[in-house]
Length: 318
Image (cartoon, rainbow, N blue to C red; front, side, top):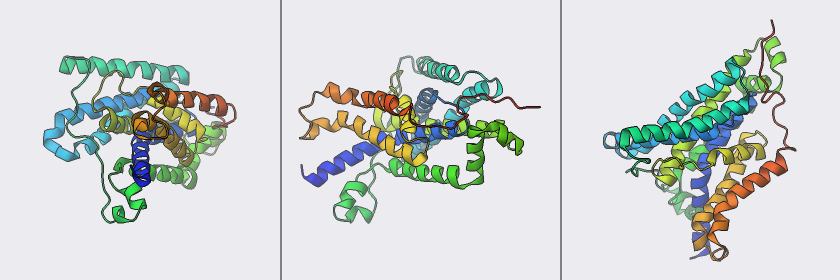
C-alpha cells in the first residue's frame, strides 16, 4: 500500500466516524450556549438513528438512492421532537438539567427497542438497502495527491458537516440571533432586562441541538451500523459532549475535537491495515476513543470555561 493510499484510507475513515460527532457536538454547543446543559445528546442520537433506519427500511422502494439523505432529515425532525422533552422539563418546569438529560438517555433506547420489537418482532432491524456510501468529486478528484486523499471515494456528509460547523460559528458569533443566544447563556437576568425573551432563545438552543443530534444519529446508523439495535449508538453522544468541551463551546473547536475523536475511533477499524499499528492488540484500539474521552473530560473540564449561566434555571423576575 502506497503512502498516498494509506493517508487516503485514514482520512476517509476519520471523516466517516467524525461526521456524527461533529453534528452532535454542534448541537450540544447551541444548547449550552443558551444555558441548558444537554447530557441527553446520547438519547437524541438514538432516536435519530432509530427513525432514520425505520424510514430507510420502509421507504427505500419509493425514494431509491435518495432514501438515506431524506432519512437524515427525518432523524433530525425526530431529534427536535425528542429534545422538546428536555426543553420543557428544564426551561418550563425548571428541572435539574442532568437528571432530565439522563431520563432522555434512558428513555430513548427503551422506546426504540420496544417499537422495533412491536413492528418487526425482534430486537433489531434488518440491514438497510441504501446507505451513505462514498462519493467522488468530479474534477477535484483528479488533482495530484490532494484529489486522491480528499476528493476520491470520500464521505460527502463529512463535508456537509464541516460546512454546518462554519455556518454554526457564523450564526453564534456574527449574528443578532447568536448574540442573544449567548447572552441568555451568560447572564439571563441582564438579557431579560434588555427585552430578550430568555425562554424563547433557550428553547431555540435545545431544539437546534435536537435537530443536529438527530441528524448525527441518522448519519451514524446509515454509514456505520447499517441497522438499529439497543447498542447502535454506543456512547457517541457522550463522546460528542467531550468534543464540545474540548472545543470550548466553539463550533470550530468542537469540529476539530470531533475529528480527533473520529480519528481515534477509525483506528480500531483500519488499524490492521496500517503497518505502524498493526501489531497493537485490537482491544486497545477499540477502547482508545473512550479512554481519550475520559482523559479529555478530566483534563479540560476544570479548565474550560463554559457559559456562566450554563445549567442554571431561570425564573423571570416580576
